[in-house]
Amino acid sequence: MTDHTSALMTALGFTTDDINANRQGNLSEPQTARLKKLRRRNLIIGGITFFVIILIATTLIYIGQRNENLILSGVGGLLTVLNAVITGILGRSYMRTSSDLRDGGVEILEGKLERVVKRGKQGDNYMVRIDQAEIYVTKDIFLQLKHEKPYRLYRTRLSGVLLSAERA
Image 1: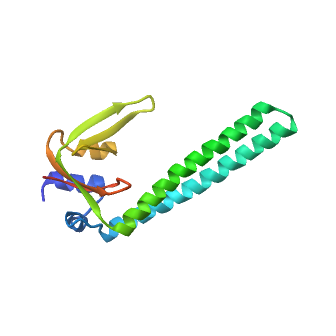
Image 2 (image 1 turned 30 degrees about the horizontal axis):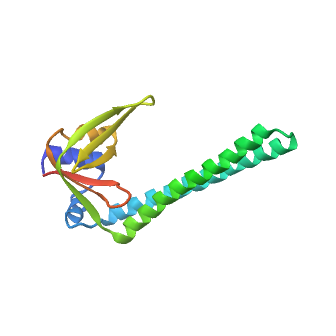
């Protein structure tokens, strides 16, 4: 095992057993546990977000109707619509992760890796492109991947969670 592979293993948090399972197109047990934890976290965040926004929207609508303030009632209504959109996005994420867990398969992307930094007002976003796919990664992972070198990346099919990587 090379130093580069060890650094990738540390940055992505995978083991040789994980990458061996990924090479065969399967999730390993620790990766399955990680995806279940991610799915549970999304469910908790979604539930809390849903109830907080509903509480705020209901309060605004109530105060708006009591004071005959059309603006507060309108903002409450808009928050309700926004809540539906957010719940839909989080629900889709939950369902994609659930499908990945049921399927147990891994998507293999192979080719020359391109590193891209997208500058934003809130900070930099680190992305890699390989085999016509774009994957957002953390800065630690980004720094471990070498620009325009051949790689094999393993990720979940629907949710796109990066599981492991190796030089091709």
